[in-house]
Image (cartoon, rainbow, N blue to C red; front, side, top):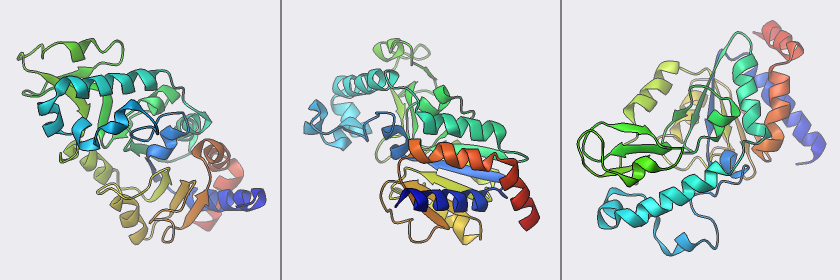
Amino acid sequence: MSDSGTRVAIAKAAALLAPCRRLLLLAGAGLSADAGVPTFRGEGGVWNEYRAEDLASADGFARDPETVWDWYRERRLHIAGCEPHAGQRAVALLQQHFPAARVQIATTNEDDLLERAGVRDVVHIHGSLFTTRCTACPWSDDDHVDNALSLMPCPCCGAAVRPGSVWFGEALPRSALDHLHDFAPDGCLVIGSSCLVQPAAGIPIDIQEHGYPVVEINPEATPLSPVVSCSIRGLARDLLPPLTDLLTSSIVRDQARRQA
């Protein structure tokens, strides 16, 4: 897409989303990848000899908990060295300044870059990389400072602890899905998501089928691209700042109000 074509597409996206009063931002791996976070496992990494199921499943943890924890500690350390990019900071600005409307951010990413960018109340559909929780009781706690909690048994019951991520074969947190259902979005911006994994992939489709606008930002086409209201090719870090500028513009707001 040419520069002029991108500008036209961003303007179209802003016009579609400006009337929304409950805007959902659904962020996938592409949003974090722009900040240097590998998409699951980086090319050429020492972890590529392992199957994903060996590193992120209850069975894999039962077989070799130390290897699983070594992988999670390395991921935590890597992400701690990443910084939020302009697109993630734009999401925080949109949440703060989108007028007369609520903006809810949900993500399948496990990192904390959105929070560090200033985004509030992020719904982590697949759990949080920086949470350590008990394998036997409800105890959990934030462990982003030094991984200390990952090195000791549960302080409540003495059982082994595990990462707080949702693993293969596990149900997504009911509280996260209920929160998104109760939010009842009337528009959706999908950022950097392949839209292949359910149930998250079905959320924008459901919103679209109810007659609300869905805008997609992704460097490549996805299964969602042919059916959404507007699909823009490009990186989130490049496209979100100008889109946020338009969505918080008084001119765009006035145009949306007149069309409503």
